[in-house]
Every structure is written in structure tokens, then in C-alpha cells.
Amino acid sequence: MKNRISHYIQALFYFVIFTLVAIPVWADDASGKWVPPGNWFIYFVIFIVLFGSLVSILIIRSSLSNTTWSLSNALSEGIELTEMDEDGKPIMDASNKPLMVTKLYASSSRMVALMGMIVILLMFLAFGSFSLFAFAKTGEMPKSINEVVKFLIAGLTLFAPYVVNKFSKMFEGLAPKR
Image 1: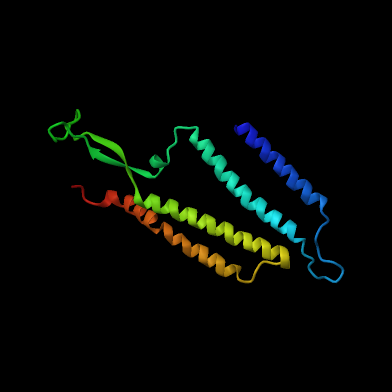
Image 2: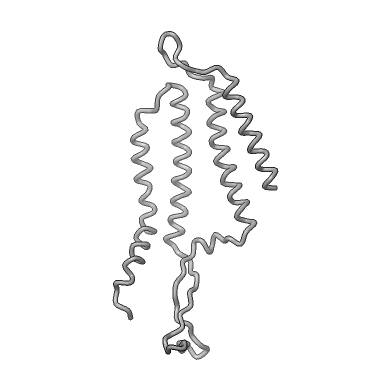
């Protein structure tokens, strides 16, 4: 299956390269004015970018489904707990210290980070598509692109809970033990 998908991707890549080489260059004409390519070409390039992104995500998903990798484990966090016996008393090791066991528990901060990453990825692809279209039509990037960049950077605040959680883990060793 993977081999067949890679052949399709190679064929698509060669088709795109051939298409780009076979079309005359859209550059400034003698008057110095931008001559945009045809709408079909603009839509074709944007389609290839979006389709390529989707295919990449599907290939990654397909590759991960054939392994022992698990999204639930990736979104879980290892927490050390004291091992207890049937009576609810801690099990002691050879040095008479409680036996610690690491267990995976769901992490809401990691889930928020995953959802935020997906939202930012989709917005990035959408704004990128509009920017590609505007660039193809006018020969320059839209003047409002800096505002879009600020908006996307502000979207990184979706990762704030995850970052705060990681910082709290860094300083956890400084807190007194209970």
C-alpha cells in the first residue's frame, strides 16, 4: 500500500513539474506591468498545495496505524504513583521506601495543545491559499499579510496551558516533598 501511494505521489510530482515547465513564464511584459497567469493555473496550484497537505496527513495517519503507536498514549502523561497492596498499604522496596509505579493518565493540556495545533494548521492553510491567490493575481503579497501573521502568532496562546504545565513540571523538584 505504501509503495503504491509513493508511486502516485511521484507521478503527481512529475506531472506538476512538467506542467510548470511546459507553461510560458508569466513575468513582466514590455510595459513592466504584472501579467497574471490564467485562473485555471492559480486554482490548480492552490489545489495541489491543499491536496498535498491532505495527502501528507493521510500518509502519516496510515503509517502510524500500522505501528504500536497510540494517540491516547501520546496525549497521556506519565505520573508516578505509590504501588499499594490489597489492603491499601504502600508496598516497600528493598531499601524500605515506597515502590513507585509510573502510570499514564490523560492530559487535558496536551489535548488542548493538539486541538490548537489543528486549528492553527487549518487557518495557516486557509490564509496561505488566499495569499497564494493574491500573489498570483497581483505579483506581490497582500499588504494585510502582516496582520494575518500577527493573528496567527496570537493563536499560539492556545498552547498556553501546555506551556504552563511544562514550566510547573520543571519547578516541581524545588517544591517541598509531602
